[in-house]
Amino acid sequence: QKEVEQDPGPLSVPEGAIVSLNCTYSNSAFQYFMWYRQYSRKGPELLMYTYSSGNKEDGRFTAQVDKSSKYISLFIRDSQPSDSATYLCAMIKAAGNKLTFGGGTRVLVKP
Amino acid sequence: KAGVTQTPRYLIKTRGQQVTLSCSPISGHRSVSWYQQTPGQGLQFLFEYFSETQRNKGNFPGRFSGRQFSNSRSEMNVSTLELGDSALYLCASSPTPGLAGGRDEQFFGPGTRLTVL
Image 1 (cartoon, rainbow over the protein chains, first blue to last red):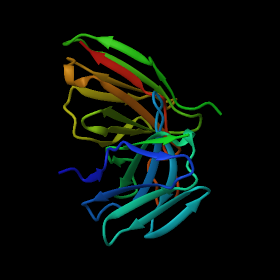
Image 2: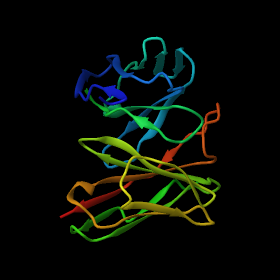
Image 3: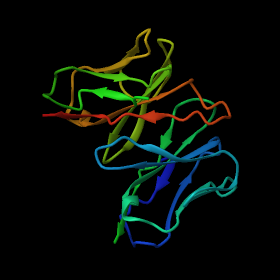
């Protein structure tokens, strides 16, 4: 069983809809949580970074962390076709650079 | 500010050969991490270098190795290539080796796509 599980999708939504993505993890040692977006033929780019349980908002993006349930979410409001990409959750156990990634969810926002 | 650059972008090799990939981090960044991305296994951590020293290593065989130079540029080498080594190899740089409670983002390069025939 992988340490971080993420539904591969694809997730298809109409433009303007809310996109809801989530990951579950098994190891309570994970302390830092990130969401990356990866376009085709590009490297991942960081969207959101959180440490504590709760919500964090940045523009159209909201990240949620529930450490008690070992569950993290990313919500994209007012989705645009340009949001079509693969979204990867990632987490780190301690102050170090070894990111453990989920498998990624492919999102398609239809105009 | 220039981003992370990786060369070459595409590479085709045959089984048994060896390959060297190069990564130039963002200016001023001293930590470089390498990841392998495949459809089956996703993104997996290979190793991390800081100040020419390997700080962290993932669960890959010894055929995978790397090094970092004094100018923070890094190379990774894969010897005796196998078909399963076909993947996108991503390099990421950050100012320091670790988030240390702060937001020390890792910036990824575009990757080198390696195909082993």
